[in-house]
View 1 (tube, helix red, strand yellow):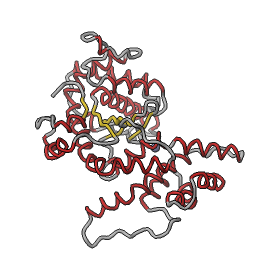
View 2: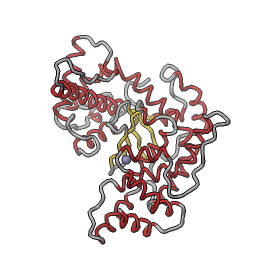
View 3: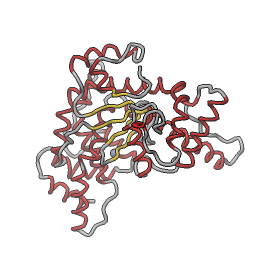
Length: 366
Ligand SMILES: [Zn+2]
């Protein structure tokens, strides 16, 4: 198995994953080698991107421990536990280097948001681009000089052997297991869903496959998307991204790019009405739409797993929101958006009103 990372989908498609590398995925490999690469998405399990997100996660966990100690009213008060992933025993020398790397992430990145901070976005993209390199500073191979800012390249190179020795095998296995599980649905439904969503959003699905960085850890939301270039990062170990939800998170994240015409239309309608642009309406609309478009597939997946006599009740009106989706929206404080989307956006999804009318009515009702 190469030390550097690799393209999961490609390797799966070529049947190149060794039994030692992915002992539990053998059945799927044969199938994948017959049917070829997946449509729509391109999955990566990159070593550097995984190390980067893990260090970011560790740095934030350490900060959280510190904060909880400061906030504790009693000295023996509860302290946030560090992730179970930090359990392996390191040698004193390894521990020192690892602590230095985490400390660097604490001071440089832990206070910044992976989704919006430009330094973190550029760094993440560069680490993805250099996934096939064993180094980042180009000391052995000039083509592997990633030109990273500050000392982060040196820090990551120093932490790399420790990560590889203690965590990477588990993280990589979790990533590949996640891809293998979502692959059949992407293969069956990917093209149809991408066309349907692009039509809904009056947009075009990108010609290139969307690059997905599959990582053991992502941000606190469990997945995030950065634009120009469009790249999705998904946490393979996050409970919110498992089962049929894996397909939903993929298409939700891709919609952050595809649904840009909706954001523009909401802004335009608000300006015409001299209204403040409702924060998160666009995001709530993406949740709602992805949920609606994927609902038949999710129901089918649930029914396949359910006993024969357990038939889910069918939704019979257009102004109610299915419970799972309602819960997702209300967790974010979007109950009102959810209600309005069912009234004004659902008719558009059902082909009863135009895109422009639906957005105009939605915006005037907010
Ligand atoms: Zn989102």
